[in-house]
Image (cartoon, rainbow, N blue to C red; front, side):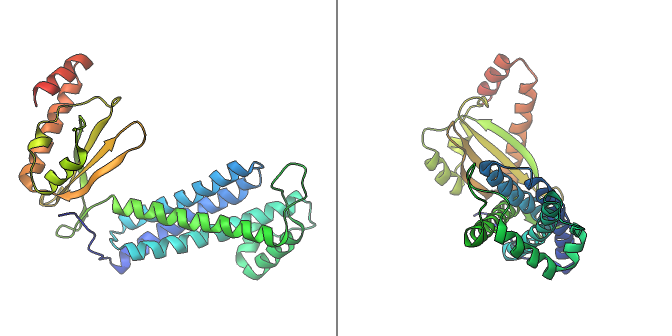
Length: 294
């Protein structure tokens, strides 16, 4: 009923994903390490940490997409490795800047720290004894076990953030194993919200499209259903539809990658083309025309 990844991957594809993911993670780690020293507000530092994790997840996730890897376990493993690479580079860059900031005589460069993990660890232990910043203005720098705990939480946020985003990237793409290619967005529609979205879900799962076909077009500014059709451009045999309820509070996916027949997929494409043609008219005319076509 719903599309699921086959779990297949090739060694070459995995290497491509690892190369792209780790390279992107290393670059992001360097930027984070050099920039974090400039962030004094703990809230901004927290957001920067989340951004780093999300960036790593995106790099590694799309690296696996490029390598045609369809295995969530492999995805999680690569996210963990990429996160470790990024954190290692960020620590090297950050410690090198810390030593320059506090005017340490002849401080090693961040490249030297990368080459010597033992020296990097000793530098971390040295900094932990004295600290570099405090959780509140005017307070003594955070040191010892408390600082170790903060660093651990920081690393955990990066790893978890990368895994979450990486999982979402891979989950949101369908792959045609017959053609060895990812599906593309073939159609999109903005429709009115039905009285009972959960009933609509059950109807679509039962291949009952009567309620769906009766829904008029809607404006993006109002609550609406965002309908996306993903299809294989080669064989046109693999087609999935995703319906998201976009409300004022937050979007909620009603169905995600529901497998549908080619005939229904073609109908959605035609409806999407009509909606695009109607959008070229004046907004009032476009809304009236779209509503009349249903």
